[in-house]
Structure formats: structure tokens, C-alpha cells
Amino acid sequence: MKLIDRQYLATPFYGARKIAAWLKSQGQMVNRKRVRRLMRIMGLKAIYRRPRTSNPAVGHKIYPYLLGGMKITRPNQVWAADITYIPMARGFLYLVAIIDWYSRYVLSWKLSNTLDADFCVKALEEALEKGKPEIFNTDQGSQFTGEAFTGLLKQHGIRISMDGKGSYNDNLFIERLWRSVKYEEVYLKAYQDGREARIGLGNYFRFYNTERPHQTHCYRTPAEVYTTIQVEATNGGMVKSLPPDPLRIAGPGLNIAPILS
Image 1 (cartoon, helix red, strand yellow):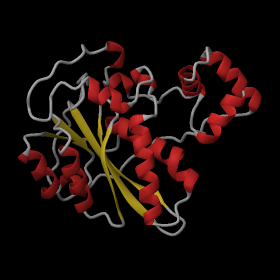
Image 2: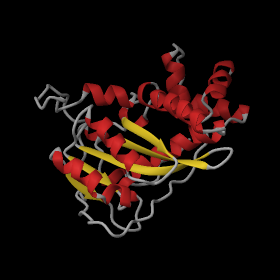
Image 3: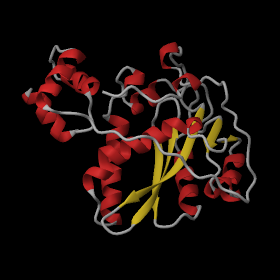
């Protein structure tokens, strides 16, 4: 219970599953049921929020949704991007992130005090330095439908996919990322200004990519999954990959609310 309490103070967003995984990494032979019972005794409970949707945009060319019925089985098959707002003590900022759909690896992120497309294009340029997806999925926001963003995707031969109106399920994985970012970082820190927000989010995304275990990937980190199961190397050559695990296929069947500890 002392170990659980110490870890919970550092990561209050861990539920029984992640606490059990962390204890095992520390050499403790313990299962989830015992951890759940001890956390109930201690009055500890993980923090979560419900996902929220994005507003559609008008005025630019809308591309069709390409992911219906598709099974996502490898990194760099589908990337996704979205924007959310980051509250501060005074005012707020906008945050854009680009994520690899299969591994949940955050390829790049940028903050801005306006909703101009520039910070989204810069995030895309940074992400493309790490690889290239077959399909790039976004909502219908003007930042993603503008020529600056879609033109860069076309220039790299990437197929463009956009969500249907009124449904967050199409982009559920990045919505889950926002839930994690806000409850595991933003709401706990209450940033005073943009500088503090950039430092805090930078530290969080490093933690999310390289330390935070994901149940979907057998408690491996997004960085481990992205770097060890890649099929297409950044130079365009093919590299040896592991066969896809049917238990970790990211498809429409995962578009349901997760069971939370």
C-alpha cells in the first residue's frame, strides 16, 4: 500500500490495471484484483473525463472518409490530427497533435494563441520528418481543409480522409489522447502562461510516448510499438516487421467507450 500510495501521488491518473503493471515492473508479484482491493481501502481512484467532439468547418473542399471497415494493423498506416484548447490561469491556447493511429505514438504537437492554419502545417512538417502515412485522417476544420495543409499531404503522396459530420467515433483515438492530456497533465498543473504550458506539455508527451503503458498494446509504450513494428522505413525501403496481433488491431470494433478502472 505504501508503494501504491507513492506511485499514485506521482501519477493520480493510473487505475488498478496500470498500477498493477507498474508494481510488476518493480518486482512485486501482484495482480489487478489485489491492487483494486487495496486502492478501494485507501480511497484512491483514477481521474478520467468523457470524450468531446470537434466542430465541422465550411468553405473548403471536403474529402471522403476512407477508414470505414478498415483494420489498422501497423504503424504509419494511418495518422490522425486534431485540435483542442488548453486552459490557463488567464486565457487559453490551442493545441494540435498528430498521432499514429495504430501505436498511439504522438509524432508532433504545437501550441498557438490563434486558430490560424500555420501551427497545424508546422506540426505536419515536423511529423513528416519521422515517416509518412498511407492515409491521413482529420475532422473538417478549416485548418485541415485549407490548401496549405492538404497541399502538403498531396505533395507527399498521402491519401486524405475526413470524418463525417456529428460523430467523434471516427477520430476516437485522438479524442482519448485529449482526455489523457487534460486529466493527466493540464487540469493538474493550471498553467500560468504559455511558457509554462509548453514546458509542461513537452514533458508530458515525452512521458506519454516513452513511459506510459497502454493496455491495448500489452502495456508497452507507444514508442516501443511504433519503433519495433514499423513496416515502412522513413527512406521508403521495407524493413522486417512482426506479424500483426489480432488482439491489437485498431478497427471499428474499438470505437466504443473504454472500460475504466
